[in-house]
Image (cartoon, rainbow, N blue to C red; front, side, top):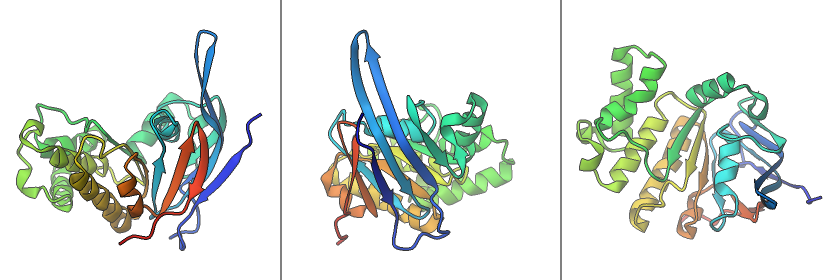
Length: 247
């Protein structure tokens, strides 16, 4: 049996004293015929409101698998995940859809924008799904685009924007329904180092201003200094490493 590693990712002063994310004994095994690959080995950690947590590790270390378990996009073989007090690993599909709609915002490496929609329309999509009144939706779209520095690009479509601008739209969209948790899987993977750092700085600013929790998978060592806590995965085993001092 694998040794359980329990890691607590907690800032010096958590706003409400309670973790938003609690992971206990998470294990995930992928099977292809007789071959087994252990993606997560008894992973445990906590993350608190107002905290940016970086998850690093080489390709194949289990970063995406871990984020998928926390976000309810996949189920573990054993272990438990709680987000905002809800047992993600025990929710039925309808409950998971509600959680992902109302509590969690996702940001992906590939941006995931709808090509035929403008930046403003892309940001507004999650609010359309929750039937937010049009006036309220339009006002929040304006506010979010201003927050990410794209208020002058509201009517442009993704192909008219740079990669960094597209990812800023994706960040704004992820915030549309006021999530309590942001999950970002290699959000700077397609960007140059300078633009990637700008996106991470934006995420850190959002965490501070909105009081959300952010779990960000990254392979870029230059971005680790922007995190409050660093979780490191090696072949599915999690360890806690001190976050470098910010400059």
